[in-house]
Picture 1 (spheres, rainbow, N blue to C red):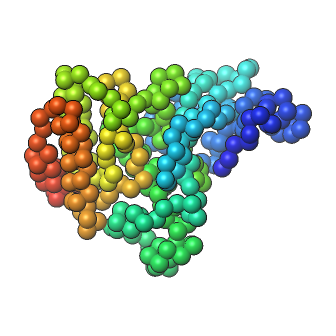
Picture 2: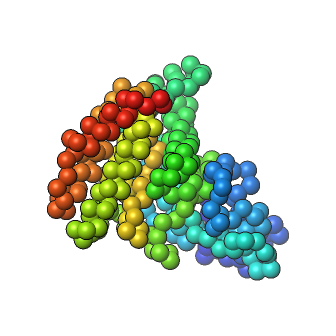
Picture 3: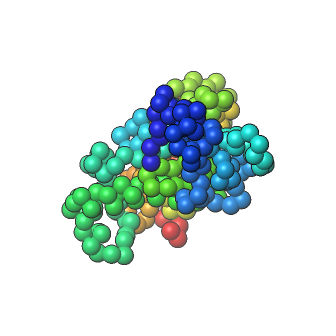
Length: 283
């Protein structure tokens, strides 16, 4: 799913060349036909099909996907409870442009019913690579939905269609919240943030999950609150033969950051608690 170039596809240009183009923005709302997030939805989610959308630029580029800032709003004369919102649009790379060297370890424990699909994924055929790319997007959307329902601090997943996921934008105005690694919290706030991290990792473990790639680069700090992002590699701790290794790595990586910021924390203790909870989960 791509956006038209704003310089050549302005609303005025579009309205004179394409009668089906929206009166404002770059495209009509992509809500229709997409997979939607859990209910009850936040009030800021615009579901009206008469809404329009515009790409406001890139927020982040990565190996697996790029994240854009997207504005969705209702044109003048349209009425609905929510009239304007900012979203983060995560656009996953196609199978030909993705890096697959790290996929296999995370995908262990995820099973498909069709043996043909499993063989293709294992052999990294063109079809298998496309299957893996689709699994990453679907896995992240599904994970965000379940974690949101658990009350964990994650962006609300608005919708998923093809290789684009729209989710809650975490930031102030049009400025994205900083990554935890970029921040220097006060000692008092640092202690609070550690307790927030501990709650997240223990709740995940109780459900039988590990983030799989948790680090200060995958955590945002917004209004003194941690928000954990980037979930496509979420790991089934019990089903994956390396699950407890992923869990331990997540914890030691995060605890190491807190120690470097001056907080005395015990990674062994946190991992011990998390491992016990994961071992007793029914995932």
